[in-house]
Structures are given as structure tokens and as C-alpha cells.
Image (cartoon, rainbow, N blue to C red; front, top):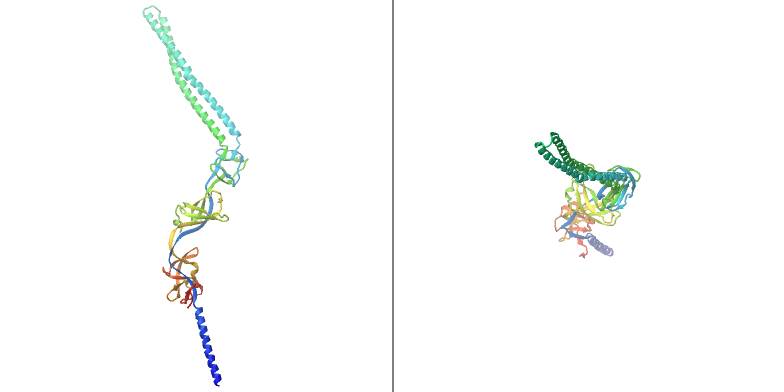
Length: 402
């Protein structure tokens, strides 16, 4: 009986010891290992992510000034062209004939002008001189006959004869003088006809030159609208060319963000399938929202010396709208719970954590903005938070548990 009692007592003591050991192990399991970070304000660059179309920085619809039949279009869509390069040509036969006709008319007008000038400069002065000399001679003869008549040395008929001749010579002299004015007027008319013929000849030559359509810029043929053999109307586009050594990325910015965009703001541009990263800047801000998308068009100007960016590509744009400060903490440190977003704050005095509900803002890379719920200097749990409860005892990672 005594033996059984001793065995029972030892068994009870052994169980108590085992239970104590189990409790110690359980308490040790409740001390979690964590990592923490101190809450402070952080500077960041605010960005706006948008996408848009690549467009040439400059485009031109190339058309002829004249009507005519297309002899040939020398380019294809996608071809690179240099400034001044011939891209199309009209048939020249009709315009060559017009040049020949206009030049013939010019030669005739020049001959007529030369004749009129010779008359004014040579013939008319000669006639005036002859008429004047005859008039002067007749005047002297009249004066002598009149003296003789008064002396009754000649008859009345002799005086009448010389008087009639004097009147005729006077009229001839005055007609010669008036002929000078007429010759000057004829010369002026001939000069006008010559100028008109010269203008017509110049136009015919220009028209002939305009049968060749040359590129006004270095760029790429974006669209070919006509082919050789077709009839081209004056002013109707034959090809569309775009300058692509620089391009625009046209993006749509919502109205709530358009006032954040300023001229000259920097932008990072990337295109799927192109490893090159491009830099650009804001060079155009639309003043009127699109009626369908309700966004404002913003143009990002990007240098494209190698031509990798092609019109029509879709580009991703990151606009840097300015530097700001905010409370940013690691994204993984915020836990989503039924009652809101939660973080655990570490108390270094008691080595415990407390559960804190926070108001979050925008996500920026691997961080999230905290609008309220934390104060500067708080130490938040950044690792080990998923198994924590309010009031749990913890130890910092790397520390040895006592």
C-alpha cells in the first residue's frame, strides 16, 4: 500500500514537471521574430502613366500646282526621302509646247519694241529736223518776198504763193512734233506687250518645272494616294510625307490631372518591342477636351534620329509632374482586414506590438502612402506581421530570446 502511494506521488510530480516544460515551450512559441522600420516623410517624384500614338512632328500633303497626267510616282509607302528629292512627275509634252509658244511670242514682242524704239530714237528726230529746216527756209523766203511786195517789186500772186507754202511747211513741222508723242506712246505699248510676253514665258517655264514634284523635307512617305498613269488635279494630294527625326507622342490626360501638366515637363517613353528608352518633354497642351473621350490631348516631343519610333506605334509615357513629400511605408506592411487597413506598431519598451488602423493613399512602386493613423517616429512591423495579434510579445530579428 505504501509502495503504491509513493509511485502515485512520483507520477504526480513527473506530470507537473512535464506540464511546466510544456507551458514554457508554449510561451516561447508566442514570441514572434519581426523586422521594423521607422515612419518618416519621404520625397518622391509624382508621375502620371498614360499611353498614346506616335505621330510625325511635321506632315505635308504633296500635290501638283497643275492639272496633268501622272508620268510616274517614284516612291512607295515607308520610303525615306531627302529634302528636294523628286517623288512624282507629270507628263511634260503639253507644257513644253506652251514654253515654246510663249517664248516665240516674247521674241515677237521684243522685235516690235525694238522697232518702236528705233522710230522714236531715230526716225522721228530726223523727220522733225527736216520739217523744221524746211519751215525755217520758207519763213526766210516769205520775209524777203513780203519786203519786195511792199516795195511793189513782186505781184500779189507771188506773195500768196509763198504764204501758202509757209503755212504748209508749218503744218508739216507741227505734225512731225506730234509724231514724236505718238512714237513715245507706241514704244510704251510695245514695252507693255514685251513685259506681258516675258511674264507669260516665265510662267510657262515655271509650269514646266512644276511638272516635277519634290519633297520639301527629309522624312518618310506615310501614304501614297496616286499611281503613274492617273490624272492628277491641281492641289489634290499625291503622297503624304512626314518628318520623323523627331516625333510626337499624343496622349490623352483626364481633366482632373490636366492642370498638373506644364510645358517642358520631362517624360520617359517606351514602346513594346523596342529596347531603347526614350526621353521627351511636353511641347503641347490641348485647351479643349475631346468630346468622346473627355480627355485633353498632350503632345510629348521625342528625338528619333535612328527612326525606331514609327508613326502609328503605341507608346507608354511616364510624365514627371513634380517632387512631393509624403509618409510612405512598405506595401507589404499594410494588412487588409474587415475593419480596414491595419499595420502593427512595435513598442521597444515592452517588446510588444499594437494593432493600428490607417488610412492609405496612392501606391508608389513598392510603397504605399499613409494619410492618417501613424506618426513620425513610429516603428512599424515590416516582416513577420502576418501572424501577429494585438498585444503579442515580439523580438527583433537577430536578437537572442532570453
